[in-house]
View 1: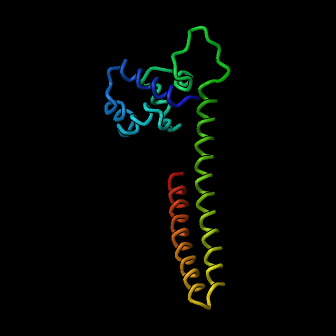
View 2: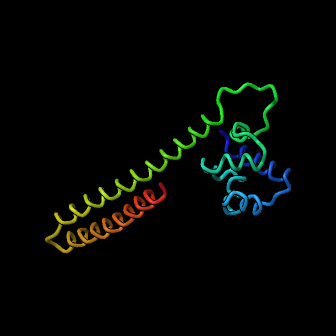
View 3: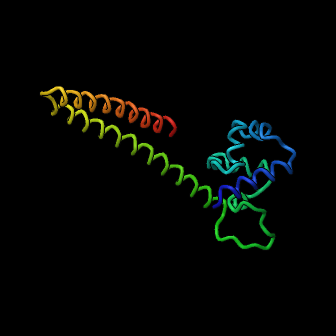
Length: 154
């Protein structure tokens, strides 16, 4: 799957339909910047919108994933449902990875807080203890943000 080829294909099909990025975006319920990111290959359309995008551009999901119009007699080893299922699973794995990263930040923050409590006794040790405590607080906040963001988008 080549994101740049897919983006160029979306661009070509949109132009064939005489649609602007804004018009396509409105039909799909996304921003024109999102359509621009697809067309430049910076990101892929979300699995939940791919079917609507293909319907709007009058292409199949297979053609979208290949980044080109398929030949009439071409043989496919996969179908649209399989592709959508694979894209959904990939999306779900990305969300799980984000949540895991957030929890890892929280655990590391707790470890840094524990370490900061063991230091102390001299000016230098107090400085490093305070520094570790500050870093752990920031890390904890980032971890909570990442986990919260991941949970809210599921």
